[in-house]
Length: 302
Image (cartoon, rainbow, N blue to C red; front, side, top):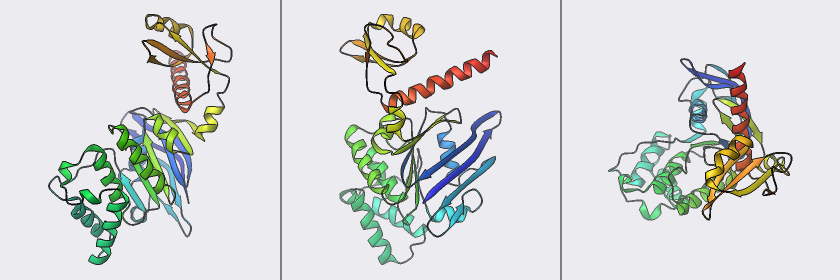
């Protein structure tokens, strides 16, 4: 299985949401990382057949066929599972009844077959005990697990999940990660998120999108390893943070025991207080954001 995206572009008036994006996504979980407004949701909606692209190509290569995702929308929907960032549900309907309805819409006509499918999905997403609860009573994490349950109807070959862990508590986030990891063993899962930890924990491949442009693509561990020897960390007074930002290429800062830890990208030690540290995927992300910002600033000044 392989998803091939070539030169995909989309504009909303004067705003270009996607700019000539090309990606190749294999089996397993692929992380699409970027800040809010990066174009991730636009790309997900195009792949989910909910929006039209202005230009480009997208093809899903399966074992026995290749689907043109921009033109053969009916075939895409037969093999697609989709969990959007925001999705509405009938609050007074029980979970099992709603899944039964979705299964019928997906073409599972025989009641016995639907019953078996719904029961299996409820067990798989750990919702069996909540099957008679009204959907309006579900917590955020429980609602997301229901969203994955409905996305799995029809044994999809491509599952798209858009910002699935935003707002989840740590326990629900871990539970959701385990569920996605299991699903990713049998199909392509595209995980669109702005949370670096989701990609670090789940994804053997990733891409970083910013202002509609692809900045980085590859194995997260390999991308982090490429920064080895160039990431430096120091504890500095919070009052002096702005001075450090002006003098050094600071990637990130965070509070630790009342002081501020800063991480700097530089070939040489920035100063005697800095120590070399192992690079992380978060460093890759912030380095890409910094590079994109510098490029934009340079272009603006030309």
